[in-house]
Structures are given as structure tokens and as C-alpha cells.
Length: 306
Image (tube, rainbow, N blue to C red; front, top):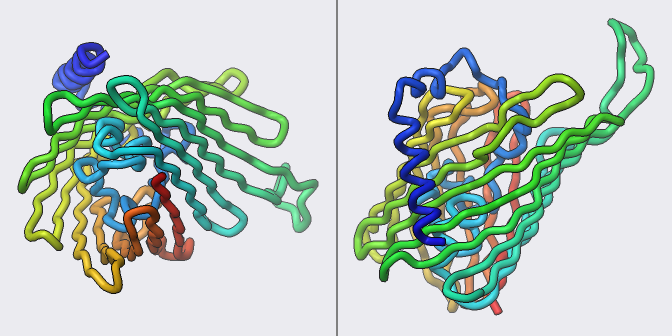
């Protein structure tokens, strides 16, 4: 399993180093991928750091951000998240992780719903009808240690999308590597690798993204993180995050701020911020990110260990 995941990561990296790099990072392909909901960062800690979380993810959050980070935690974990997106759009996320064999197993469910969309066939005052749309992802992750301070992992997931009475589905693979150091942290992940998602006769590629991340422990209480993002449907961009941990009354209280150089929704707002409250058994994280005229988004995530 270790050799397979490592070989897959190396193969994918070498394929990106060929002449296809220009096609991969083609700004003209902006927004051409399907299943766009897969770009929405899950949990609250990662999004509050602007998405600069590939090297920092070291618990159940690795199921989304970096499967290689999943193995750095112990015991059983659960995470639930609610995201109030734009207008009548909401996203729910549920994940569970546990030890299994020489590594850790994780499962997840993500569901995005959009209600009361108006159906029109022309420029009319009143809609003909209303309909709903939904996207879902269900996956299984597994991660193992590679040496004392490194982890490698993979996630296999099924993706489905529905618009009114039309539906489409696809399978995808995530791969990840993470190295934990005394001062420096390193990570790499390749998300949503797979074929296209097809509605009737038209197929769109999945939003595949290669993330290269680094983190530095400035002090026991301060972390700085940086991610290089290489999407298949947009230009190369960066994310940077900063975390400062306070301690009060037996609580860890991380304060987070992040910045992303490229916003997926073409707004001028690329800042994000968040706060957390954590004990040895539970963690509550909140994240805020503005999207210009579209409004603000709030994420609430709860993690538990047992």
C-alpha cells in the first residue's frame, strides 16, 4: 500500500512536469470543470487560513485537505461541519476516522443543496416553476506512516450531481503526503483525480488540484503556512495563513487569519479569519470569508476525539 501510494504521487508529479503543464494551468479553461462544490474547503481551520493547510492538516481534517495527514492523530475522531453558503445554498459535512491495521481509516460524506431555483425559458417576469439541485461526495480514506515523521494516504470517493430530474456521477482519487518536523512542516496533495462528470451527452472534467504546502513553527504558539495551488481550470495561485494560539482556563484558543491570491468567485475579497476553542476531547472552530457582492460565508465545525 505504501509503495503504491508513493509511486502514484511520483507518477502524477512527473506527468505534470511534461509539456502538458501549460494545458493544466490554462487560464482560458477557467470555470470549465464540473462538480465545482469539490473546491469548497471543508472544516473551519483550513478555510480560515486561506486554504494554506496542506502541510498543517494532521488529524481527521486530512480526509479533505491531505490524506497523508490523517495518520498523525490517535484514537477515534468525528467531525461535523455546517456551511451557510450564498442565499438558499447550504453544505453539510460529516467525517469519521479510526485506527485500522498499521494505519488509519476515514470515511466522509459531503452534501450541498440549492433550493428553489427558478425555471425560465425566456426573459419573463414570472418563472415557469422551481427546482432543486444537489451535489454529494462519499469517500473512504486510508493513511499509513512512512518513517517516524512522514505519512502517506489516499481517498477514493464517489461524486454525484443532480439538477432537477437530471443526474451525473463520477469516481475520483485523492493522494497525499505529509512530513512533520521539529520546526518545519511539509505536505503535498493531489485532489479530485479522475474522469469527467457527465450530464446526458456533455462531460466536464473534475476540478483537479495539486497543492504543495509548507509550514514553519515560529514559536510554540505561532504557525505560518504557505500553499502553492496548481488547478487544472485556473492559473497558479498562493494561499498564506497565520495562527496564534492562546491558552485560557484549560482551553486552546487558536486565532487564525489567511489570504488567497486568487478567489474562485472573481471577487476582490481574498481575506479570511477564524477562531477555535479546543480541549483534549473536543474542538469548535469558526471561519469567516467574505465574497464581495455575493456576501459573507460562515463555517462552523465541531471535532470530537474518543
